[in-house]
Amino acid sequence: MAQSFGQSPTTRRTLHYYWAVTRKHQGLFWGLVISTILFGLLLTYINPYLMALIVDRVSEEPVAAQDVFTVFGPYIVALILVNLVGQACSKIQDYTMWKLQIAANYDLATQAFDALCNQSMSFHSNRFGGTLVSQTTKYMNAYNQLIEILAWPLLPLAQSIIFVCILLGPRVPVYTVILMLMLAVYGFVSYRMYKRILNLNEEAASAQNQLSGELSDSVANILSVKTYGREDYERGLFDNFNREVVERDSKRMWASMVRGIVTACIALVIMSVVSVFIAGGNAWFGITPGTLVMMFTYTYTITNQFNFINAGLQRINRAFGDASGMTEILDEPRLVDDLPGAPDLVVREGAIDFEGLDFFYTDGGTQTQVFDHFELHIPAGQRVGLVGISGSGKTTLTKLLLRLADIQNGRILVDGQNIAECTQQSLRRQIAYVPQEAVLFHRSVAENIAYGKPDASMDEIREAARQANALEFIEKLPQGFDTITGERGVKLSGGQRQRIAIARAMLADCPILVLDEATSALDSESENLVQDALGKLMAGRTAIVVAHRLSTVASLDRIVVLDEGRIVEDGPHARLIEAGGEYAHLWGRQTGAYLE
Image (cartoon, rainbow, N blue to C red; front, side, top):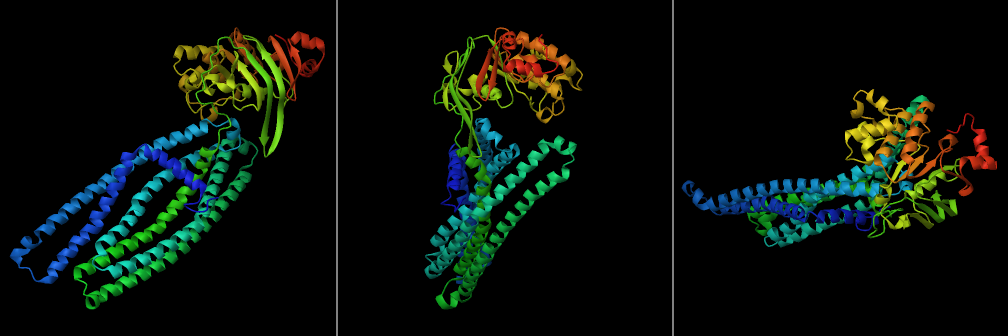
């Protein structure tokens, strides 16, 4: 939990990431800083300074009408130039701020996207997708907030302190010292109170993220909510999170209100002191009228800026609180990462070896062993079925082959190359994977099919759809191949989604094929057609087929039966049936099972 602006590790790390991005656009950043300083100097301090000179000149002796431009001409020209340059600096400030925010947001969005995409599946399995999206958005918005706070009020406040000392100090040194001491007290009290509520802002941001996650979870599973009539239940859960947001926001609000009241009282004392000085300054100390104008104008300006610093600190609190979630994700080590300078995997034949495989996963602090010195050799071009009861390790084995998680010990080799020493992208581009539950992008049918081969022609996409027994239903869709499938493919049936996923694998034309219950959502007629297509697709390729429905694997070259992460049987269908072991038992239990 954050402790203060200067002490919080999360805050320091957020600043580290933000500064790394800002350095890429230093020209815009320093342009913003310089234009902000000049804008404040010219319009806020030089303007009153010139006006004070005019007031002092007027108070010295009367000026005849015909001599006005002669006497005050230089002052008028100076005022016009000061305002001209000041306004130009104001526009440069606007331009550099917007350009910097636009450029930096592009980099920050890319940074967050890369961090999320390159994390392991274990990372994503333990988080809400909606929360991650919310944290990314807040991370980008927080940068914009901090840049705006830098331009106003932080830089103007810092320059005000300097300019007041330079311009007012030589004229009224005693007053300047008293003013600086009172402002120091103001700043110290404000900062101390800021430290106390920094943690409240991170707590409020955490509550907001949880609320976003709950909303995302309910919306993503809206079909289950409606079919089970659980709208009231979900609303209750949402209301609990929503009330938590209200409670934490209220604590933050009251803490900020108390700080605002205390600092407002200090500001009142400061203005009371300046009122006394201005009222009696000329009589007691012989202060000129122009200097009195400067004293009031500068004090009023700097006191207002200190008032704005309260709102600025609140916005800083909120910004760092909002950014903390994504900062922690950026700091989180990747569970699956490429070695520095890792080469691409080159697959010429497709032989796969699992050697001495040890793998366990951790959930809630508890380790669950899946594989212990697991060994399996799959020759190039062999079609292998993985079967066994749920939890035996079938799907886990395919995910380890894809490096969606990394093993603790042992090696996985593809054509003799250790996949842990090759780039993940090159590995996965050699493997066409069809999962048990096909999830599609909110894009057209054609784009979903061509995902593994973006440069595919429409004829290739159509042919892949035909082979996957998907062409007929696609052509009946409202816009055919241009039909948008909806989020996660919600507009299509389970069988239709699965056939599009199979068409995608066919079009990818990879040397290794992994099918994880790829035909489980198909009816019998569609399964026959797709099995025939898959048979052609698997010819000459190394194929791993995970299946509960044994008819799916019965015609393969080899069937491996797993039980609690161990191989209990290995061989072709006929031999395993004759052996009368676990496979024969599973086969007998499946009514309607058949061998093509």
